[in-house]
Amino acid sequence: MFFNVLLEDQFMWNTPLLMSLTGIAVLYVLAVTRLTDIKMYHKQPLLFFFSLSLLYVTIGSPLTAISHLSFSLHMIQMSILYFIVPPIFLLGLPSHLFHWKMSIVNKISKWIITPKISLIVFAILFLMYHLPAVLTVFSQNPFVHNGYIYVLLILSFSMWWPIVSPDLKKRLSEGRKKRYVFLSGVLLMPACLLFVFSALIDGANNPFLTQLTSHLCLPSQSISLNILPPPFNTNYDQAMAGFIMLGIHKAALKVTARLGTEESET
Image (cartoon, rainbow, N blue to C red):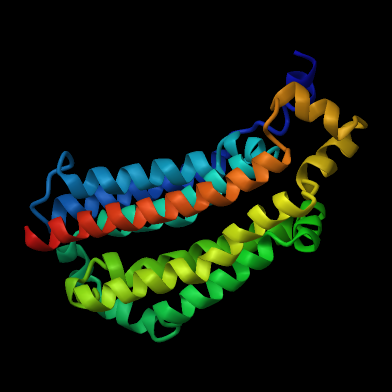
């Protein structure tokens, strides 16, 4: 009860984000009902609404604050945000609706880097994000931290584009898709191994937890044990974080590829 009161301000729901996502959902419903024959109970609308719900739960709910209390919970949040939300969102966009907006998309795409470059930049920034020094800076500068998160989110949409683009012609062939998926796994591996090696060598402090406990004038071990008992915020937790990200990324690639194949066959 004591910690619930102290952390009450941390466990807030993001109302402006909810309003924005609701507006996007309304626009989607209007566009789909007027410009396509798709019903709201069909697979694509359900995927689209599911992606918006996941996005809100991931960055607009108390899960955001809770994920900062543990390495493994943090990696679950990041994996959902970058490896599940973008492909499901793109799969939820009907190709008919996409072609209707093709002229606008073509103009915008000229200013967007290619998916492969997005993948490389994402992997570099994602690795940098989890370096202890960078995490410490982010824990002290929420504005910079949020900006970094949104840049990664934009890059993640771009890197998923060749696999689940609403325009079926923009998707990679089977052979090229396998090579792209393999490259994706290789580039993201260092970020996963960083947690595992840190756990094996000496472990690392969680700067977000340290910043929170210093604000509350409490020892970090005290709040960690009361809110998240072991193995959270231990060496086991860090190693588990790396394996969790590897597993979710691989599972997302397999499920997304299957959903994309089913969609192209219909």
